[in-house]
Amino acid sequence: MIIDSHQHFWQYDPERHAWIDDSMAKIQRDFLPYDLQKVYKANGVDGCVAVQVDQTEAETDYLVKLAGIYDFIKGIVGWIDLRAADLPDRLDHYAGFDKVCGFRHIVQGEEDVNFLLRPDFMYGIKQLHAYRFTYDVLVYPQQLGAVLEFVRSHPQQLFVIDHLAKPYIKDGFYDGWALMMRAVARQENVFCKLSGMVTEADWSNWTYQDLLPYMDLILEVFGPKRVMFGSDWPVCLVAAEYARVKGVVAQYVGKLSTAEQSMIWGENAINFYGLKED
Image 1 (cartoon, rainbow, N blue to C red):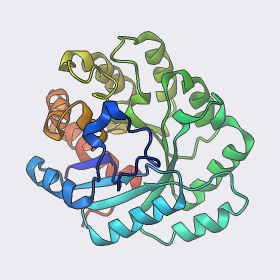
Image 2: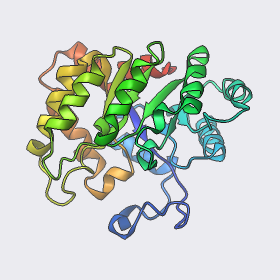
Image 3: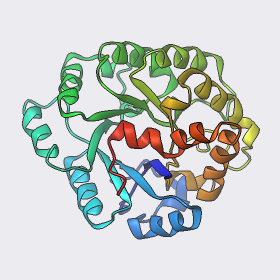
Image 4: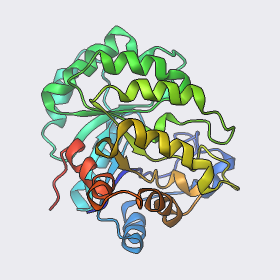
């Protein structure tokens, strides 16, 4: 089974989605489940994990609604205020929805480089394990020092790094990112998504060889048991169509054993997020 561990839906709003600027005009429109169904049918993908875009519970509720209509949405990574005084009540509420697997905060957008380490956020993260909720880590490379301390502080909590922590592929920066990712990967409760690479490269001129060193590092330090495929659709469309994004991963993992390929294409996402396969 092929599971896309990272994709998004939205009803485009210029104000709410101001991060989709004019350089990303191609995705300044609605992207909904029936659009993705056609893409998956053409590319042999069986299901997905829908990941939040807006930092509101309304966004989480919207994804819950979509997942109730479309069976191919196997899991949801929503948003919840992990610093809220009523967090236990909110977690109790979302624990009632089978497809809510975990949560994410757009930490890359926080000015405080140590946002993850602040006591109120750390307290919120500590509450997730009891509910078996996962946490997606969305950061830039310069935030990986905080990530290392963060994941070490919560050894029982399952984490996954989104988009390889967004290395600066276009600029060719590698060594500092690689050093920190090696350290983070030593924490066995941390996984990594092979996702978001094409949008960190030169959108118009990237090649497979540009991405190769970064994929090599991720496979080396996390191993095939802690890596999962993700497309980052529809954001990926600013740099490549879905088939090309999936093709990069297919070319790369083709050197692995059949069992290892199955892990990366779907088994790791199913096990990490606790997805139901039927």
